[in-house]
Image (tube, rainbow, N blue to C red; front, side, top):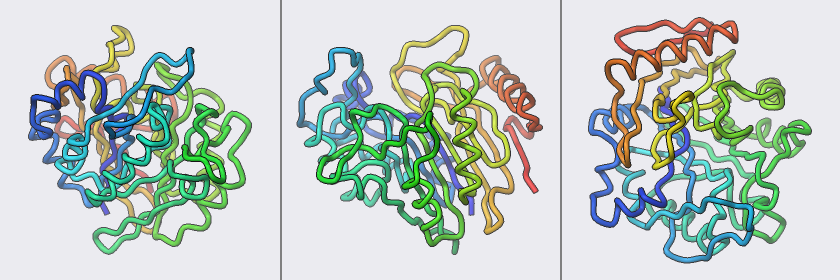
Length: 317
């Protein structure tokens, strides 16, 4: 089974303004959208709510609020998204009403979701996706913010304080999924880091030990290296964020993992350039920077990444 993965996908703020006049298919270049649709399954981190309701979360320390218009779900459908994780620090940016709308729009489009819900049980519940005769379980979790945590009768995200260890409910969720393989997709660690912080490394190992075949994280806005079936950070996929001149969060990757019952066998990563409300294939010096940066990040983890026809390749087993 060929699984496509993308990191932070933010369809609010100026991207939402763009969607007011531009078609929902215009945010991703045709060649990148075609790559996404060619996969058997596509899972990404939706870092916004989709709604026209709600009010900004009442925290004076919170600087950013991301809400996409209903038409944004057509962007996800155009890309062939099969499942999104909502376990992140923007799912509740406009409160419970907007989260409820997000779930309804995704359901209506036939896009599965994990990591947030009307209560704690729903937020923590895995989903099982089927494609190519393969069943993939997906579990979402975020280690921030605790204020967004779902409760027994309160909407919110699947929160886990990974800095203190992987919680029992998450271990149980990974072990309970009846599937050929389980993907855990955590929103973890700090923004704008070039490598995983210590608690992320510890949590990744614990999740693999618990039975996760693949761990694919996000939050840093910068892609990290990979090690033993762990993609520590997928980086950004679509946004309007300010660009850090050193970390180059405007340069990213679209990830493809070949999975069988034994786990991940091969990783391919396609270099991306994130422009203003447009993600396209990276070229020239940008693509070379991405390839060099990824190979160095992998080498620091003891993983060899090769280049094949402009793509980055890692093989396991």
